[in-house]
Length: 499
Image (cartoon, rainbow, N blue to C red):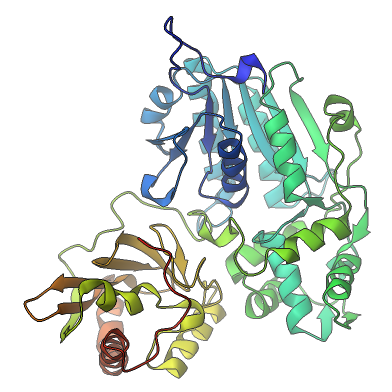
């Protein structure tokens, strides 16, 4: 880092407000960038809608509550900042994501200019020509909107290869689950993949204000089709795969197919597949000239590194709050107009032992009761474009606010005391599932509560219809939690790492 990108100092040598601001720190790329800055000891201020979702930040990281769609706080949050990273988009939005992206970029650019920010750094998408997909066109328009206010360094990348990335996880899921793939014509589209480590290297290097601003196309040395990329994934895992191309598959059918087979749900898959008709190939050598110290790895090495991370990548695309719809302030806590299923059980163990099976619920551990019913609910959610059960969880034991747990998201967490999950499956209303553990004279009381806030008559009818199933599932869940707490059933997963 150069002196221009370091925090200013007072006369006595103490540092003042960080000069680097980061949006999207809870997302896939932003999370990796934050890790890189923290390892280097670089002060960063993270702008986020939900500060509790940033877990285990370093002492050099500070957090400010801000939302690019609510511009009132943005200017204050950016005061004293020299370099600001804009790493957010609305691909998971249920509305017009292009409009949201444009408004958000205008808000951020205007606030950055008013605060005196010297550079905005943005990660967009590769692609050129007249027939750009709505997604790629929106990414380009976002870059232009930012540059209209503040000098902007815009990196344009194609598919990013890394454990936990949306594109790579979708491709790898296809390879691992389908020995014979019936594939649409987009598998023949050319792309120039880049490893996540190289993307982060470019983003870090751009904080040096001596480097030029402008648009830079970045990619690895290999130009290949998506078919050849999938075959390389298969080769490295010792799998033999056959791909049969069927040009008649429409983007709609392709997105439903991708949503059923991979962790990507149909709403996001449709936008992603729509963009696969465009070649994402580097045509400019500007990045090589501006950043000669960066030599991107080839696709084979990027895949090898991604596979070596196993099932616990440092960041995951699904953990981003934009991965399924827009976050709304105040959505996290159940309100009073609701249906409730509450039940409790007392166990003769301390609260930490009573809470242990609760902390492990979901993902590979399952939901302890009604496995077939949970699987059917996940499949139904997938078929109607929801997230389904495929997201799993970041870690089988450790958990934090903001984590995904199948089709739920952690809304509140207090070690050994409270876990509240907010539903992200398709519902005619809003739902939460909560466990609270309190000490008693003889052990602990576990209270399990399901909250449902119905939307209209359909919501009320839904609750009435599923109540018998809820009784069966929730009663069984609590019974199994009690059995595991008291040692009558084996506790799933490895030992906890500590609260």
